[in-house]
Length: 234
View 1 (cartoon, one colour):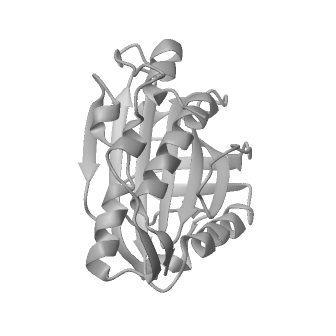
View 2 (cartoon, helix red, strand yellow):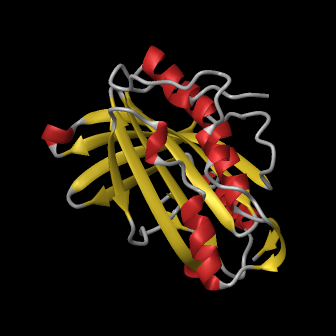
């Protein structure tokens, strides 16, 4: 089934700054730029680094949005309930792309692991994120009350080994200048030793960010499947 370029829907619904869309007959950038190779067993560190980087959507999928790349290892690929994942110690490579445009902020992180499968990482994340409902974060003087909510499903993400989706509402209470609520809906996609975290954030307490996330997730899945060779293990 063909998928329409995610930016097309986002432009129509939420992001007028993104002005170009692919026609339905054009090859998806997620499948056109990276071709999968068949493999079995774990990848050497250098190749794992390469496929992790290739698992991300590219800037060519957007037009007019602001992109920021962060090459350094983030504090944690997944965090919640005031904790991080044990699998953070097994990270070999990580890369994050952030796009901002209109009412949306989209963050995609690809993480390559050694010694643990991305499926096991997603299982760790699910266990962590269902261990509490409310928690408080303090970072650089900003205090926020977090609520993990809005669990939902995305169908037909063919080629993934595991998928987990949820939303996180964040209410900033300090400082006064930063007060406000944002809702981030997130899809964790696993294939072999690589996990992709796809996040769509919008202001407010509703779940409107589910719509662009559902549109973007198949594109991100196709990119992940194309990048990680079939049969790759941790």
